[in-house]
Length: 436
Image (cartoon, rainbow, N blue to C red; front, side):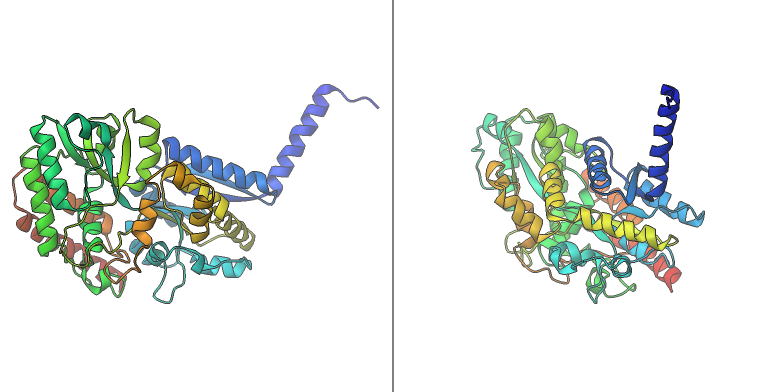
């Protein structure tokens, strides 16, 4: 019996459609574009191609804040995805969203999936677990701040590119030399609150907020206006007035200036590696985040930024089985090692870090292990475990406003940080009341 070409084509299309329909569909909303978005798509395609039971559909929903808001709005409409990427400052908000989330430890247990929370790096895992050690969300893209150095710019200014930049005092001396040599941008930064207040506090083992930075209860108050924080912010304010520190914006606007070769020093996430490696035409290296010698217990450990993956309530058991399989895939040593090497994000498990070292990546790319060492050299303390504060996204906006007043010379550090604490505490009280 003969079949027409059109009939065979139609049958093939129908077969593909039936095959796709047979797969359990998993919706994954994230905040990545550009190279990071491409790498997420690659991970999803690899998972989908590795098995035939589930099909993950990844969708970009805007920046971190926009993705969180999209997820909240979708849940209220009963149209929530299975997996939602939420940046670390949204952790308390997600924990307080009663009935909206299904904790990862429950997802794994209900699915009968093999899952070992102890496989995750302690300083990463701690951010997303309960006080009993139960994992609420899956760490995904975790980074920590480091100091990026334009070696060519230092050399052009007559400075040894290997000069010691381990402390802020030594950084200050180099900034003066760069300024005197006529460098227009001695230093810039990304994510000023995260790096120069949140991580500054953790790295010196001093509190950013009471109640173990919010981990021990909702009745927390900001303590970001202590002597250490005031000292650091005032130093940066003075540098800004002298042209030694150039402020570019609240997010990562300074990254473009550094990648273009305009700035000598740049405090930024370790995840800046992907963009800097791709775009920089100068010799660069990465150093540990500087600290103030003799202050607190520095260097302690820095804390993470980035995001984790939250599982939303309201789906079927077979769909959660697919979610469990996908999350286990993302945290597997091979996938995590590749993600770490491609992006500069931390390997969230010890096995992924060990595999990266065995593959020779750190030997071939000196400095790429600094972020890992900075996070794991010491056990986290109550002050360096992380931050779990309600309305933290809005609190960061307040902090940004107050820091900008210091950089412009309109306020001194003490007045600005006192104001940030007072205004931020008002939001914390509202969050506490709404959660009780």
